[in-house]
Length: 580
Image (cartoon, rainbow, N blue to C red; front, top):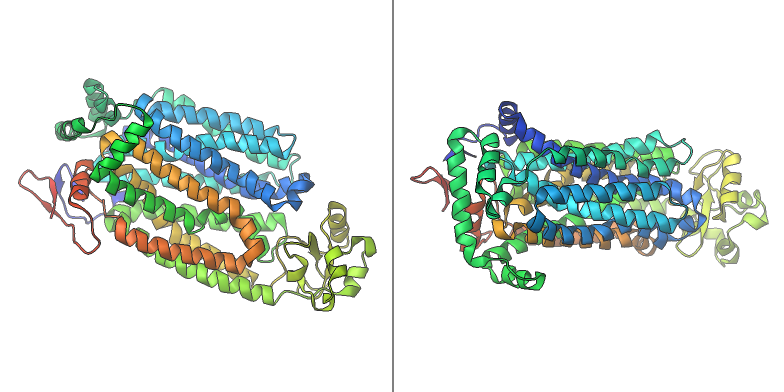
């Protein structure tokens, strides 16, 4: 680890150093936590829909019957985030990181209000798009602001604070979902609460400064120095100013004057920027194609796939996975700068692939063990409630719950009144039929079948989160906050965030459709294959950046990264760090 420009023994975790520095200079933590509320909102608005969707399905029958409409409600926030991230890059460079965060707060507030008063699914979708614009801007701006306003020796831990608040926001959303389960207008409260943190952050940001690096590159050297004096020791300020000055002088020949197309051409024409984009985009795309947001957006639904039919039970079990995600973020804060971003990502990917393969096997076995459909049990509810596909099937006698819930049946399984694993009824998917089933003290299964091994799916979902969160959960954002040259940081951060959200959109918009066509087992197997490809890409393209100043990262990229070369830090004559 590097402290004060000199190499020191890494005998403490970065978290310990962060705590000590923040205790001595509380202003640093104030900056990080205030900006990190954007991460909290990011997490809340991406997590809350998982529980709210269960009740939106019950209020709007068309949503319950149309998988694509459920996917659209979930993924429209991601669609908005793509545009938010794209615009965020330009706003970051033009108006600064602070203004960008405040604009995101406005989108959060407007979207929350629109969703809370929505009279139809299409208005919910509009509100989700508004929130998505805020999420996209916050996803790139909050870690960028924290990174540029942090001493480089604790930069990784403080950026991880934003990751912790993202997972904290997701955990909070599950708590709010549970709190409003029995409230009138439950899903409206769940979605509307997000407006409150947005107001708090907007007010806090009014009293905070702009990023010192952005101020310097825009010719406001005096203001930049004033901020650095608040976050660095007096003996370190001049060194940091000199580092900024050297960086700006090196980049004068790479001015980003002109329109967006010209800027993109200049960025791609710069070998350092291009190599940084290879690494940054690889990390962001891999983060999404491991399937993490299928778990965060559809966690209660996945748990219902495993045989837990109750909405409240599904949300309570989902709270476990969300809580573990938050714990993983704390682990990342402790170790990201001791063990490095690259190593954590590689180890994380290995664990992710293992868990996905096991989940695929569990769902395959659960489907083969689902209870049979009984014609006697089905007849109890009357002929007009029986599933039409079951009546027309030539092999109805061999139907199990799995066939009853098939993609083309529009039917549900009403479990046995004595034992959930015994034969039950295959009925029409309809609100009145569902009520009849429940009034008979039976369980209504519309997403997944009763299973003796469903608990194993919950266990390995939890393990999946445990191995994902410390590595792939936070490291890609840290890499993207420190791998680009200063002049291109806003633009490249926007490009990488757009790649992240585009990948996120593809995953969230297709997950339920994939489960219909491939089954839960096949879908998790597909994600395991995509994760394996991501592991190879990370190994080949993403360098280690731990403990380096921004300028040192640039020099490493200029020389070219190869996983088969060793890049080591060693003290030079001026006590800086050089790449050997």
